[in-house]
Image 1 (cartoon, rainbow over the protein chains, first blue to last red):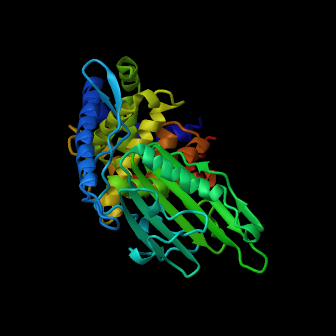
Image 2 (tube, rainbow over the protein chains, first blue to last red):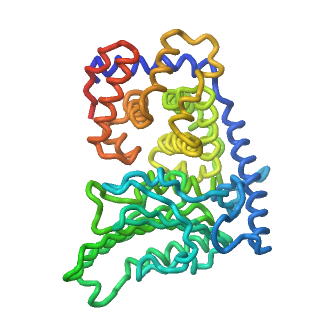
Image 3 (tube, each protein chain N blue to C red):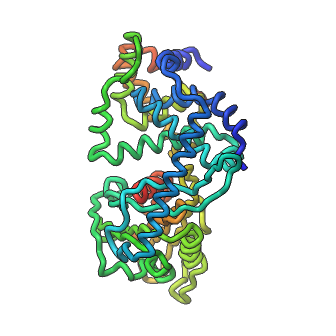
Length: 263
Length: 167
């Protein structure tokens, strides 16, 4: 390690004295905090189920409460650990902000518009509309930018994790198995790529680039990110892959989407 | 079945490091404590999975960082929110140097601060930092270089700008 590297490390190391004067709680206290958190989530999840069953959740727009329930959950009893499924509630305003989407290559001037008229329309011929997959509630937004690029986001709340996972699987398999006959000429569809997200149960991205004879290149990217029963579906469409971009739905945007969705 | 003894040993071995790194990242000791404890509480919730990871400490650190980023994101203006943070709330008797360093860290952009903390404090290589933050290595090198230059200027210590990142 070079000497001047040590210099900066030593400078930062000066903060250690503050840390040592202000120690954290012991590990038993931290475990109790985790278990209390689990119990609060169980209560929040039960309330969310009641809301779903009662039909309190709307079909489109403005769904959910401000519960900060998160999962998946492991609940500890006094003497044993038991895995318990507790549904999460979505946030009051669960969609990405335009600033979260940020600059995607040359595209950056985003406006977010809830667009109920188009909510049931597939964004891609091979990918079913996320609202048709059995979610108890959903919130939808359409990001408009330049004319040749747009994105959509669906935040879907299912009754349980299995339903959310199955919906994500259907979306992904719809695209990876997509065959549009002659219109599929010159198409490159990726396999589902996992996106590592430490605070999510799963994140996947599938891309599809098509250049039919006589047509411009179109680029479509599907991202699905899930935590417990909450599934966020992100779709992107532009004329070709934006310059300087390798993946639109990268870990940062997907985690931001999940953070917005249920926290 | 979760293993409390394994978690306790992991916590004992790592929590001061994570708290230290979060302090440098957030420039706020109270926030660092809260974020670190919350990240470990979440780790305990999923301990049967987290303990199987190659590097559970990296998982905790990343969760703590994402919690911080989420809080900033929820503010109307993330930069404004960060600037609103006052000096460390309960640092009994910090040295003048520490106060200056905390103030300097608060001044440099979030991405540069994170790269510097991961590289110079957590000891990650440039490639490891790139993997953890999800950015190309070239971008990480640029953030390190700019962050060091900014810190050097703020601390009036130009020897900090002579650093070459270790691979």
